[in-house]
Length: 327
Image 1 (cartoon, rainbow, N blue to C red):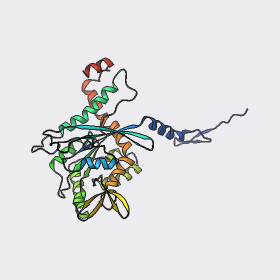
Image 2 (spheres, rainbow, N blue to C red):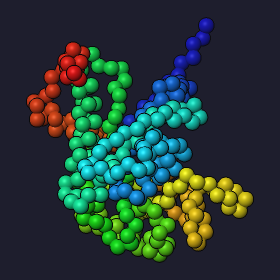
Image 3 (cartoon, one colour):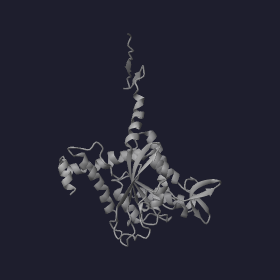
Image 4 (tube, rainbow, N blue to C red):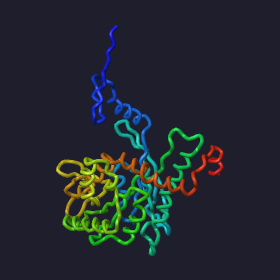
């Protein structure tokens, strides 16, 4: 019996030319099947003072009632005197792929008379999720799949003043930009004209640059020229000026999501009306996996290295130790 022998030539550049089919290309399908079975997690935090439409925008992004307000939040609930961190999880399924989406809300942020250091509870929460993951990693009997509650993305809502950023906006983003992926958005942008919106976007970008604030996607993490080219276009369009709505209206014979104003219907997904579609495509359809990878490889690793240096290395934790610490 003859055996098929494929000869492999090594090129001077380090690459190789195959003279026959191996099946390397099936790895993508293997990964897809595994993801279909296990699903994945995505944790998004929304920050901004009350009245900016944070809950509505998140519901619009995921076409589901996923926000904290949609999960039994009372409309007559008073603004808390201190910042509260509240997380609500939902399992979404599309095309056979399951995603556990956790929306982390921060009611009370920016709503007090004195907002000094109001970012501290949020920073504490973000670091606590890194700490949870780290403790699971150093367990002697580690779980096959560590629960991931780390914040992969923080949508920061900027008030559509048309003037400039508040000092609180600058301080928050400056202090947290090195521990979480911050994506700034201009909320309720339909309150401005197109010209006002463009001027405000340029002013915000300039203020962020002057403040040394890096938002996602950070230039230093561009992997190649193609990556840089794609991300440069995104960075030039940010902060996205958005409108959210869970109400439908009839426009030219079609049902569309929109907001009714004295001038007509503002169509949420119409790029001529606002930049919601740009935000959705960027956040979910092109960069969701990268947000998770930057969280794990950059932000979490930075936290992990700092903790290990502080403690001279964390000692492995047994199952009994974990149970005792939870009592």
